[in-house]
Image (tube, rainbow, N blue to C red):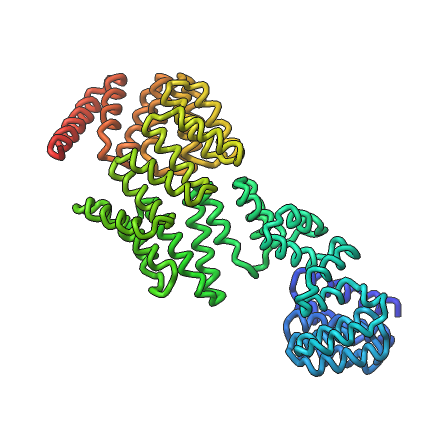
Length: 555
């Protein structure tokens, strides 16, 4: 007898292990074997309940209902089986049966859980008046049950906020009440209250992190916003599209590559969930990013997917006009854009496109003026501020650029691009130590930025710290192995270290990636002179001559 009990316990134990591994069918086979043993009534009820649970997990609701009813045949008051039968009726939309069963459970035992079930069934059946009347007749102790109060808050719009606040006064950690209050206060822009409700939660919740991300984004703390948004995505069970907001945060950080990836995931989410009305905005932003990355044909493909009746259609046409800037009749396109702007002076996308057009044409002063107009419409935009900083640097207006960077730093201390801009200014002023300090601050915030690793290597080369420079440039090449200038800069590190053979290898790689850059060939020729190999000298001399001839013809 003891051996049989031991075998049965082992089977039950094994079923739990398989259940935890989500191997539900195998777990079921273990429990069915355990049923073959002589069982007491209590053991039988317990086994049938566990089997019913597994059938529910497999979404085999008819089988699960049959299992729980078998348990109830032995003990008609078995509360767990009654509760599970009620849940199955709700899950399979048999709401009248759920209501009847919940009423019977209340008649047998007047508990908060049973009344919760009854009220929930009434609400699901849209019998709101009956639900309110039932609630009003409940004992005061049951009325104060947070979950029951929450149910009533969902159907009482007038007293909803008061009821939710009542719940929090009883149970500060109530997840649904905190999240609903966070939503209300977020819409009312009471961000401190939103933060309080999000921090009340005991367990991590994706929507809590989403609200925190949005608040940090509003306050222009983009690195923190990114951290919270990524946590929301990690916790989410594919119930909400956080990727569009993630893309917008990446855009604020001027990280267009990651923004593009996030948008692709967002588009796929909308298609899989059949939420097609949200696609136009996503196609529009994708097109805008692709233009920034000079992927014009891909940009137009995305912009042409936008429906004519969409509010994004007219804006998309503006962006399409911007893609024609490399055509012969540039002045005509600029004229069109300027005419559009005269009719829509508060259109930020139009201003951005005009500024981009002026920038492409080398009209730096006009580009600066246009971004300043864009900022008067959208003053909180970190992106336009950063574009303006870059243009001011290009215009060598360093004092104004530094003043703007300092103002931005007060709002968003953790924006890595600001450190990059300061590094650019110091580099142009030949203040390499200061430039190095700034780019190191950048890398503390975003170590995996290839361009920043390259820039640090470039500065170190200027400081004749060739060994350290080569390490940084090696990091840049690992992060992005198809950029010619990285290899050329690595060649300079090795040249500084008098390792001319290695220098030439990297210089060759730069030429292979970008054979039209004459400076790489000049450098290769200089390196070959140092090595003293006559064949190499002659080869690079001839390459250089051919490139110089081509340049003369192009002029």
